Length: 127
Image 1 (cartoon, rainbow, N blue to C red):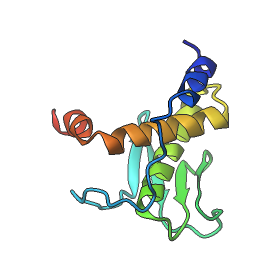
Image 2 (image 1 turned 90 degrees about the vertical axis):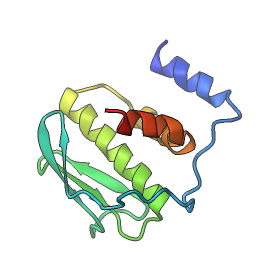
Image 3 (image 1 turned 60 degrees about the vertical axis):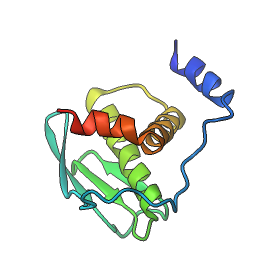
């Protein structure tokens, strides 16, 4: 199935919804990471960055840096980080992925992770 076919199918699914930005998320260790590894490279995350459009984040290739706008609600902040991580993966691997497809992918992945705590627990705690 192509990405376009997947997007067409997702639009037909009435049960797929964007998670509420103000929802309460579990608090295991809500510590924001300042550095992460993406395809073997260290990437810095700058939280509450000035100059980032409101409700947004951005990926900066030259600096190997993800910047996150200040004052985002927790759900939106988490989805934005996930979106920018996928953006960084796309750049590192030179994937030809249109931004609207990347946006849909990050939104649906966030929805799957937040609405399926047993799956999330299995993936991240079943080492």
